[in-house]
Image (tube, rainbow over all chains, first blue to last red; front, top):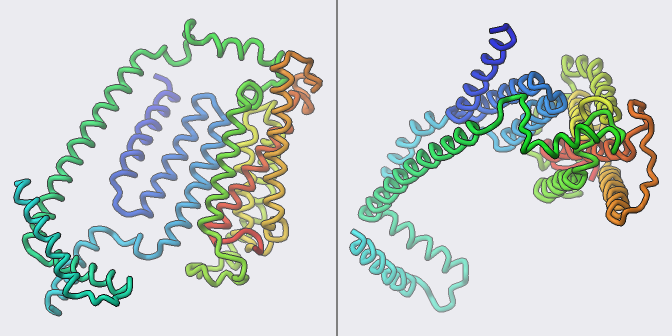
Length: 103
Length: 308
């Protein structure tokens, strides 16, 4: 097994880890960053698969512009989108009890 | 179980009519009627039996959802693995299925005059697909404009609630952009113009040009890019590029379908002016893609392109 093959296997494993990680990440900002990492790894994999034109496109579109648009969308959504869902669940019971107290 | 639910449902439906009759005056407006319905719905939701019912339904739905999701995932993976097991090995030829690919590789240089066979494929043999892709991008830009454009009254961008951090004052971004933007622009132009000779082409080069514009507007502010890219110029540029693509490719299709001689010279393979229509088509696609990418960024960032 040559060094290049080991490198390829490491890249593919990282690719799978990133793909699963995007799904399992609850917060949106880290999810976008993992998605960026996925695109970058994919660009290297394309280059290793001897299709440099796809590698260039993947690096520019996937890691660059898509992520920028995601970031901008996230900023437009504001703070609510950045709150951890786990924190939100902790806040909700208080809100419910406050409503009951009012009624 | 179902009977109980239906009975409960019917009972509450009649309850709504009563509720509306008692609440509603004959001269009630639409808004008042709507608020009455909303109050009735709130009353229903406060009912503990209703809440229990909703919980049961949600639970059932979630169980069903999970089972179906896992099942379809496993099915999909199994089908994909089965298909992959029947693929030819990576890098090896499949003599039955590779007839078209072999034809492209053998005759591509002679028939199109492009050294880069990928460019010959996407801009000559499969040019109609690329036209569709360019129009998809343009349509996406149009949709983004419809959804995100803020209106022409707002010159200062005050309707954008989030633009608090002025990136054009950032020293690091400014300094890096000063050295990086020319390099990225040159690289993008090189990739677009050399699409028929080396890997790359309109799409990748156009994206790189677009990202250079994005970095420029982030580093030096939108004032700089607004001098080049007004809304009108962007429209004219996209229209000209797509129109040129459609007309030239339509001409080629017409000539080819009727068996006439194609007057466009192929040039010497390897020279910059070769490959027939591939070079101008690459430029057209690159312009459309660059405009689209910059337009997306501008619309997402401040809700308008240029001053309008």
